[in-house]
Length: 231
Image 1: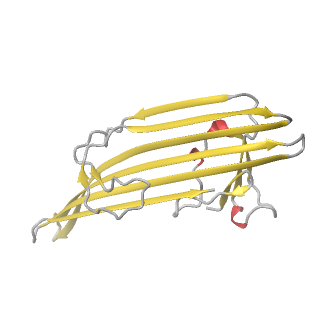
Image 2: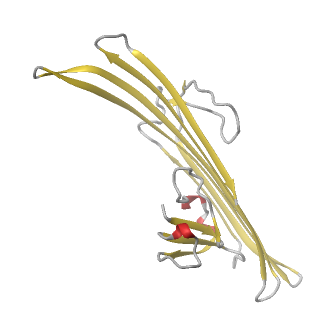
Image 3: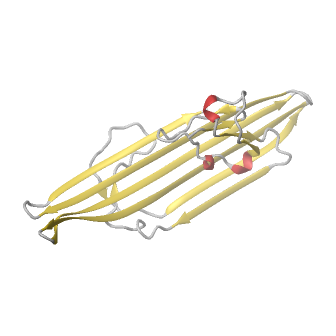
């Protein structure tokens, strides 16, 4: 809550409106030169960093050319291939009206992908360094929850109402980082860094409520949250 995350000394806003912390998995680890952590508050730190501060320093001039690509898949036994999975919205990272009618559709596997590349070269007496990386991931969650309400009538407990709720969630995350630097001499270096982070979360829900005195009630809801920032 009272910690801050900086990229090359510039404070990064959190992509989550409910949390101040910045998820560190949006930064390709191979493009980081060092991570500086400061637990005690000092006068040169932002006021909201009383709980600690993290400064991520990217590589400006990689010592050698590097390239890395990774890909991963995972299966969620509660969600993968689930025929009752509710998709709230298929429009990802695109501004569009919400379509609040969850549709049954079987989700695939959880996937993740990341790539990193960097190197430096000389142009005359000038040394130029370039680094870049991107990551993408998507995962699904699914649960069915049953709730019963008990009433005590003269010492005998009975079920007065019951509900079965199906909850389906989807999370997608995309991030990218690019940096360029120009070394003029041993003490002067000009650098430029761009960071993009986007996250999309969607949830669909279907509930069946039964009571002793009325017919079953069916409720359907869907929500989606999209957020992104450039730095």
